[in-house]
Amino acid sequence: MDEKLQKALDFANFSTTLNNQKKMAKERFAEQTIYFTKGGQFTITKELINYCQTLIDNKQTSFIFIDDNDVPIEIEYVDDFREQILNKYFNALNEYLAEYNKITSKRSIPDIVDEPETEA
View 1 (cartoon, rainbow, N blue to C red):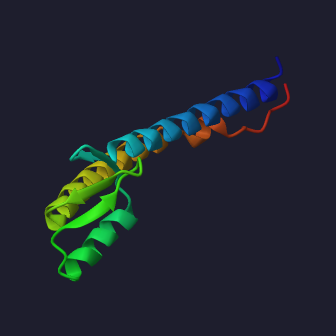
View 2 (view 1 turned 45 degrees about the vertical axis):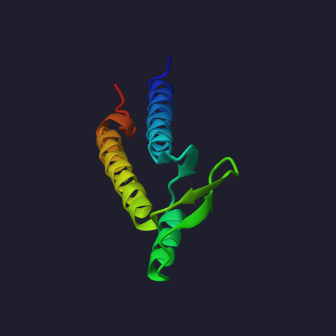
């Protein structure tokens, strides 16, 4: 097999593997940002966190949320709920960052960039 073709194939394989690892890390993050309470399932998003903060700012101590399965769930202490989802979100985000940095640091440019061929 031609050396340039082999290098191109190796690069394609490396890129595919790198993208798959990034995708798996993102999927783990998505799994880790699911919070269960009172029989409900909530996907933790920045919007949910901000919504809770808005309720707290407006002196709401309890509120009825619609969970991921469209089930109404009464949360009696919105401030506690916000703290719990915030902690879970930050832990998942920190783990995602560490994993992402680990994946991308494995990229070795000299190994994947074509070197000019020398004539024999």
